[in-house]
Amino acid sequence: MEFEDRFAALASKVRNQAAAIGTEEATKNAFVMPFISTILGYDVFDPLEVVPEFTADVGIKRGEKVDYAIMRDGEVQILIECKVSTGVPKVEHASQLYRYFATTNARIAALTNGVIWQFFTDLDAPNIMDAKPFLVLDLADIDETLVPEIRKLSKENFDLDSIISAAEELKYVGALKREISRQFREPSDEWIKFFTTRVYDGSYTQKVREQFTSLVAKASRQFLTESVNDRLKTALGPGVGIRPETPSTEVPSSPVAESDIARDTEIETTLEELEGYQIVKAIACGVVKPQRVTHRDAKSYFAVLLDDNNRKPIARLHFNGRQKYLGLMDAEKVETRHPIESLEEIYEHADAIREAVSRYA
Image (cartoon, rainbow, N blue to C red; front, side, top):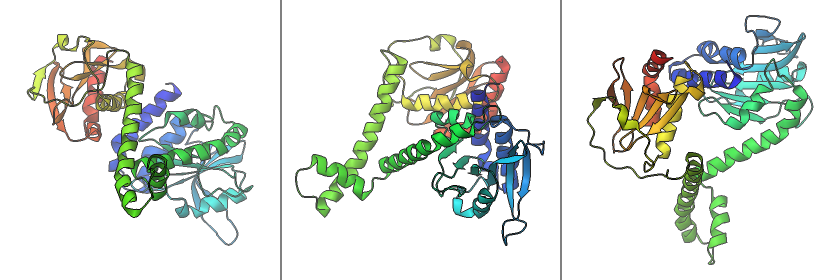
């Protein structure tokens, strides 16, 4: 399995199982050890490569342990500290990482809850772990630009000099992206004033600030939506646009009619349909390679197929009406629609989706 395929498979597992994990040990077994093994490529059962409950007494602190130490040639290369997956990992809860970082040869430390991985090094001061990570990976929402950087940490491609040289740029670019994202979601007073004073000629009073608070937020959301739509139009080709939702009159279940998914140049594909497709694809990647999962849009629904073959339907997305439905096929290719309120509910049907893929794989 290719590196990207292993990444997609683990990400799908994390999204499907994160809600069921309630303890730190369960987090380690379900998410952390598979990450070390399948993504980083180290043998978790070989003490020469991975040492669980790594102990190195530091000053007056005796018996403290770091959850995992990854070794190369007898030297510690990466330290990993784990927290339960239901909580957000916070560096202030990993004081032992700081201490061990200073007393071992490790230049890389990771704090994780199995879903979010925060990677640290010593950019600010030699042998002292930085307070802020240089790389933050969220397996529930993967930033594809980070995948090559994670590859550098793997056993096969481990290149410490390359990692450290890229760390400073990654640290600040990542921090800037997260801050920009926060500003688009919840504009700060500084952000509102910055844009308001560039489009409004009057004095920036309290009344003006209150008026422009909602306007800046609205403009930010519209800008993002229009940017995404422009990229979708470019990727999907001419004749494909973004449409508003229209009422659906279809009944809750029906057999798969292959003629329904004939290609139609007048069909418009919504962003929400493509997001739903990506979720179904991520789930299916636990069974087949990602490139085998494709889609075709029809006027009444959006079809997810295996091998771009309308005889191999995986799922249908009925997102045109006020009520959304996920259509799943049985062995006789008879569809049953499941009402969903949000795209995240697709993950609740992961087993049925994988079962459908397995019938054709």
